[in-house]
Length: 592
Image (cartoon, rainbow, N blue to C red):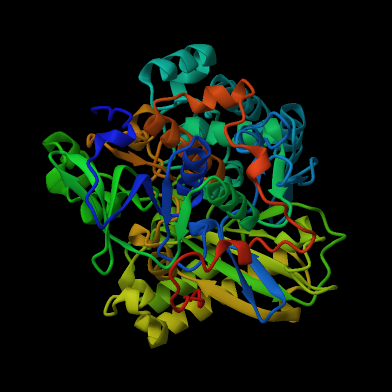
């Protein structure tokens, strides 16, 4: 791949009558917002464009009935102690004293539930191994090898630096020693090599869902990094909810002279003479800029906004062969139940061991249920899915009880999430234009949603006994919802699929073959996930500036001017601070 040089302001001639910025950032997901904040803090004239009415992309929150608040994407982040990657990144923007981190239960931030099983994933490698061996004593030897390998791999990598560099990756693998053998192999290969039984394999595989993947495709190195973040560094949640991150970035941008426009879609990234010259908005307005950072969906960036004809032939073929991650479906529930005294943990709920009788049965479950292969009838697939699919559950109100926006006193919110196939025919929206939202009235779509929601109720009862009889609000967001609101290809919130050919040095960096065009977000080498998206934004800003911002900030530099940030009062509302910026239009509010 050709590296785009950093571009000074003078590189682009100004056209009279048009607005001009040093950099335009497309998409306010955490990658784009981080890039915009760092560029504004560094003195660039920045414009952040967001097609939706609220900043945050997949990480924004939404409210219902004036008393419920749900986090769409920020559920927990690893290693957020004082020297962790995310607090360090925020410190570089002078936001470290505004965003506080609440720890999840160190004795078990994740709890895997199945009939006869309650396996807690704690902070600390020794405690983790002890819990695994206690849960599966017959696999003790294999589990010791498993923990040794993932720990060696995870601790060999420094995700906050440059994972796209083949040289740096080679150094990391050298540090990992013998464990490097498994680095780019599918995670299932390590579990099999350790001689683990099918039930143990299933219990160790459900957390792959946190990366929107399965053990059949995700590389071991990705799961090792996941464990290093959470087992090695603990699990944390931003006080005030995930919207605090977007509000913080917006504060840096606007206080340092940048501009933000919500409800503003981009029709085209303009390329003249082989380099970026700006963007054209929906409606025809043109904005000049020497640099464009796209935090939008990577496939839409190249196919719709850029146009494949502008890419070198070899890179064009690479784009055509990329595969997106599986989409996630999200259930949002308000319950008349006080969860404040329950463990501050996430749950991965396995409904039964019926699919863990053999390795073949596990593979069949992934194909038939998670991927929907072999199904042509959406109703029949939904019933299988509701009965057999493991799911992730968590409560934002429980981990941040002081946030009274989340739920009324004595009540709680519960979010359920799991992988699902993007198959319009199974879901019932194959004959509908997703952008219009007409699919929401389709009878098959409504029935599939009802069946899957009933399945979520069953997993909720596993995790939070008594909750399903006290539900006061229930909504389900499907892959069509994700595509409609955020613009993700196939409803994929996690960007490119984590597979060996799309991970590590094989995953896109922030530079592109087109001078002036940069990338940020979950499809880059730092993704997927909240932390990876923000790190990609920092690196994208550094690439635009021609600076190693990550190293500067790690060494103590504060790029933003703290004196320019406005004070946040006790009644500060991050959601209100993240919407209604720039031109107004009717907001989209129904996540169905």
